Image (cartoon, rainbow over all chains, first blue to last red; front, side, top):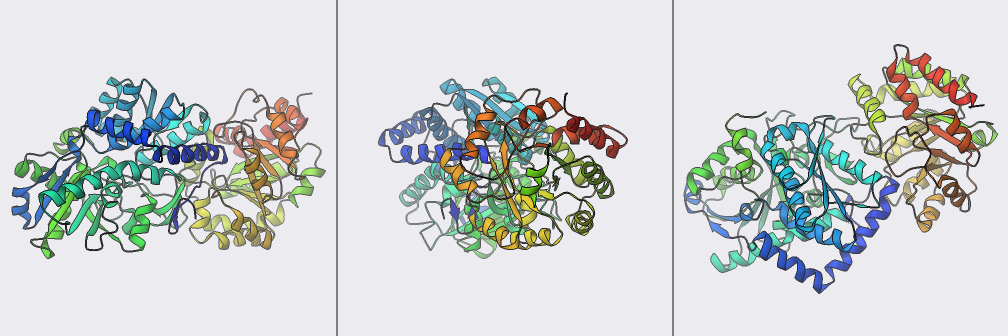
Length: 384
Length: 254
């Protein structure tokens, strides 16, 4: 069925939004079939975003874990995370659709910064919804967004994190649907967003696959990425889905364990949140749970529907990394490679500890989805 | 039946009450005063953690009801006695996830068994044909929403799978009180009427008797949610608040 990945996905939205989703789908299909759109996107990706990003052979990290580790360096993009790939693509789409106002939700602030950036670049009005808990722990990104001319709206309800910010962005969209483009930041939400975001993030996988072939030869044994909503993961996985020899690992935030985590695929049940059916952390009554992760970008009770499908069909495995393990990996990568990863990406690095135990000598491609400047004060105990 | 009940009620106002605020005993008492006050039907809202179609008042109502310990199983225990006791049709309004958790069809059947006559689900999947068929089979009305942005072909599709009444969403926006009615709502109702013989009720934003008068000039019924819940949440006696606020809406502005 249209917009589904197996039993997951779909469009579960208030009727007011349905025409906007149809309009978006049509614009997306036209753009993807249009060489002029591809050329324009390509030009911005190379001349503004700074693509292709390098593939770094992490020699000291490899020695530490006893397997061969390659890092896809999305931390080196303009704005410092993979979120810009999606933001630049969607803003070009918004412009084609004649929209002048852009809204977005953000957790860690990386998507908010990316959206504020592209709105500044194209002179669009920009409002970013962000939970007040996240605003406190990602203050640097809040200041960056404001510097770029975006209005950052604090969201106080519930746990005041990404889930509430997303709900508030949807409410804004319902009220302003004629003029407003909703620039969603992850591979979540109603169709066509999960497909749109995947296609715009697929550049990560295409580049990494070609770079790996050139630098290392052949295919990696495994591809690893952290999963909150799952956009960086689906972006890098997409190039390897048909390569049966390549194991795919998504790493979920296990937080403090014992019910305080964000591991939707490991502990959730199928459910509907924010317009899509996917694995969802919820109680017996279908009320959505509060989540926890030291990484704001992974602090979300749902997950992109395509990941739920990849888990159900066993094409990808979804593993757990705790706050503590992620924090250790954050420090480790800095000490061994001179790279400070985002706390989100540090979850992917930390997984190597589990992986290398049984896979010594294997070649692993890790998506280093963002840089960690924003997290330094969290790591040093400066924020909640 | 809801459809006949709306047609036969002279001033068809349909109040909305969030279940379990501050507790289910109070919800039951509120149902009684609303029925005694002449409600055409009553919507009982199941609180949800993430009510994306709701404005601040109903978000808060949901939040407070959940915080006060609302449980689905407790509601199910009460529904049977409420529908036996209250003389007007009860309609459940809920986001889809709480119904899906234990299987959508089973949940709908359980509601029917408890005497509920209809359901309103603002985030039904775009293709709700199977759900409508199930509701038809078990004799539960599936009230559908038509928005100001809904195109004619889509409206036709919705209305071919709608029963009880049509819920015309009056504004682009979330639920909440508004001081004036949006322009074009009469034309929106008229265009819905071209596609269905079901009663058309208008909701989202109604808070005054004068607005009810005006809407009933061209619509079959009016739904009032946020205004009533604002009243329920703002006093020490929620039942009295609900009764008085509803009486003001029923008396009209004349």
